[in-house]
Amino acid sequence: MEVRVDTCRTIDVRLPNWVGDVVMATPALRALRRAAPHARITAIGTPASGRLLHGSPDFDRYLALERRGRHGGPLGWWRAGRDLARDGRPDLHLLLPHSFSSALLAGAARARCIAGYWTRERSLLLHVKPRAAMEGKRRLPIPMTRLYLDLLRAVGVDGRDESLTLPLAADEEARADAALAALRLARDEPFAAANPGASFGASKFWSVEGFRDTIRGFHARRGWRTLVLCGPGEEALARAIAEAAGPAAIDSSHAPLPLELLKPVLRRARVLFTTDTGPRHIATAFGTPCVVLMGPTDPRHTASNLDRTRVLRVDVPCGPCHLKSCPLDHRCMTSLTAESALRAADELLAASAAA
Image (cartoon, rainbow, N blue to C red; front, side, top):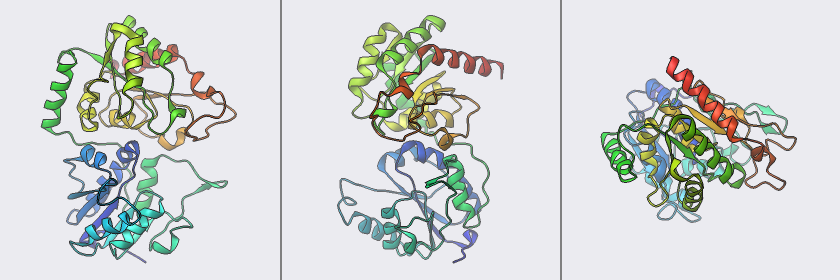
């Protein structure tokens, strides 16, 4: 089936679930809006992603998938599809995830054209189904920004700009100022941020000692404190790191920042020390230098927008494994040192000052 995006009146875009992937989908959303300026574009994703993207000019409405409510259970996909169809049958439904359930949702919405990467499980549900390049039996790892833009090319949209963008509302700035003030961080005080969490699984986590020594070493080098961030369920981890680092750390575990407030906070941070998780990409969208401690994931998936990023990793025989927990000795992460993180931060800050 051929489809012309510029003639579509209604377009649905099913976003990925992971926060980092959502941020890496922003170039595709931007390219789609430019190609279809008059279409009504609906983005579909998690409630958290809706808060992160609130105010974006690249879509007109957002359908939050309430997994614990209306869209939960075995028929949640059907109810979500029917919610989309209430305002009319979509002309085009783009599937950024590779899941079978996302194709079922598009089918329930009765989309005239469903476009997504081919997989054996959902091939019969797709009308436009390009095949991703393969490396052996696995999909060839390319930057997710490019993967999403390549899908758009299958429906006639030639987007090439892979830069990440996120909207930032005035109320988010004000709320972030209040939250940082409550943490006794002055408005004009320079600070670093540390994001130790790994919602993907324990395999992405570095160590309390690694973050402790990095935070202490950074404070000794520059006199800046480090704000230790945490997501839901990561409070104990953030608290342990902050307590171990002492006065060099600012503990946010008693009042974790909502996802949307990470945007103004990370924009203000001078540098971010982070595992390979969503906040990395939020910081990148605002040009904040990032030191990324990467272990079990293939770096080719995120190999774009690296001009202000240093990815620290060690090649090991068992990696990249993409396992949620390490069955061996976690050598891919334990081999990384605080000194290498500090050296990377020095390089990034020197380059930033020279720019």
